Amino acid sequence: MMLPLASATAYPARLVPRLGVASDVRRVRVVHQLDGIDDEVDPVDVLTVGHRLWSTWRQHPDFAAHDLILGLDAGGILPTVAVAMASATPYRLAWKVDLDLPDKRVFYERHARRVEVFAYGQMRGRRILIVDDEVTSGVTIAGLAEVLQAAGAVVVGAVCLVEETSGGGRSLLEGLRIPCCALTTI
Image 1 (cartoon, rainbow, N blue to C red):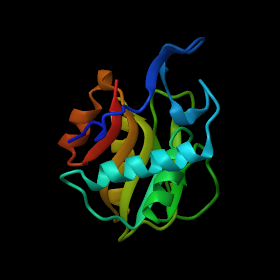
Image 2: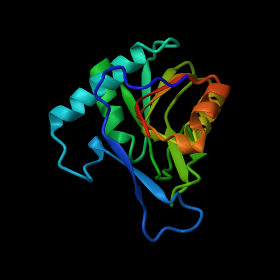
Image 3: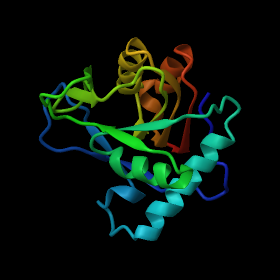
């Protein structure tokens, strides 16, 4: 179940058309407070958003403790660091860079220009919270969860800054029993 922002102040986000993209690439981008597109980002805002996102997850009815945060390249980097700082939890990042490293897992972000994403490191026995900037279709988070579970990890949930409702991500993740929350919905 995804929950809206707990406070009365919505997290600022909007959809903006992408120019010059191929037909198989998503036609809009979610622009939000931490991406630095509309305005400069004050470092205090990063910490504040991290605390709000962490608090929203802790209040989720299906909250479960984690021992590792795994964030997604590229939009999920800042929210991952922010939640890691707020929760005092170590993090890793999944990158769109194929490296010759052990314990590599590949999953796909099908609507992106570069579709392959790689998660590195030993995951067996870890309790992982996935963090990204947005969820639309839920397919990327679901793909990551699948490879993590195959590696012996438990995915306790996913947190995002923005839920973009047009893609049905909420239904997909709920069907996979991946609890998810977001600061705002558009």
